[in-house]
Length: 116
Image (cartoon, rainbow, N blue to C red; front, side, top):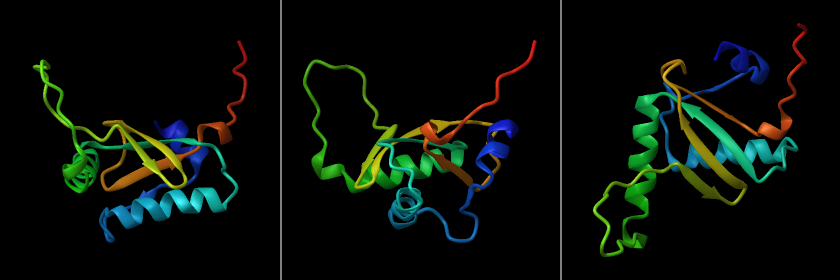
């Protein structure tokens, strides 16, 4: 995980602000304004932030949920979040530092070729 953290160069520190739909949307908007115009973004978070994201977006969407009969699997997770600035795929990563979220456009990550 440190290799990817070093390539990205920064993370979003949520320890003081906390996570809200506004801070999440602002982060997506900032990526868009910096020229990262891809439609799919990745968001790596630890377990605490993942649970906060699930709770935040599921509670906001409670009136829009549909349950289809005949399914015996229940639970609601926010694994992909659709915003005005593209889709965000939220990935649980136990190696992410506590209180930080790493959000990036994978099309903007360029890895160097490893030598044999």
